[in-house]
Image 1 (cartoon, rainbow, N blue to C red):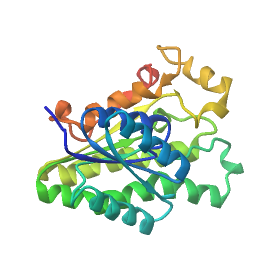
Image 2 (image 1 turned 90 degrees about the vertical axis):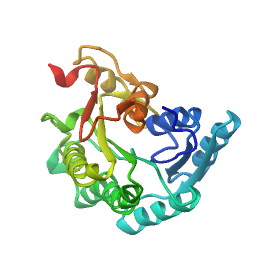
Image 3 (image 1 turned 30 degrees about the horizontal axis):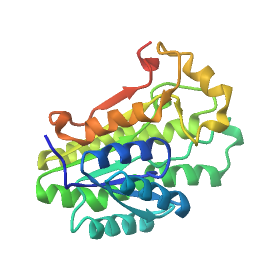
Image 4 (image 1 turned 90 degrees about the horizontal axis):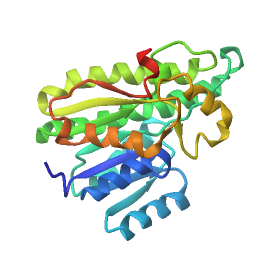
Length: 247
């Protein structure tokens, strides 16, 4: 089924997985609204999508509190001519390290972007989708929210919250036609993970696939859950982790 003409809001949409998802949705005729804190990167992403024949706009924001999330949602509704059909909560930060070395500032930063921003974006947009009787929300989680991993307590716990929120929102808004699901990636090569170096390959080697994913591979799963290809899927968490959580 065609979703041409619909509007999608993608946080963290100017790089990595988010940008890959934006490109794929734009190719399907979706008006993509990409959110990011880097204006230069945002404008470049939009220019590339438009040059390829797609429709895109950039919304600058760091999404660090409820008010900024609500402001982004309201701007997205304006750009979408009164509606946002798809919300992809992809923006996130992932500091790794021992619990006893994490500061309160780091804790607040992670939970603000990884949990608070999606929470208030949904609070603003899901009721509008429910009123129209249709919409799709895709939350981007992580495989380390499903098992204990040394050095990943802060990041993993924030995404574990997203996994529960996915189910809660599916129960809350699903009866009104809003599908809420999550994609749970494994190690993925992006600009953000380049700094991990060989550690990314070592982490990926633990899974049956034996390699990191490419951003496009995760984006395919996001697009699947964002469109009517997955019309009977509610409250699911799709593992795209090379099989790591299956063993």
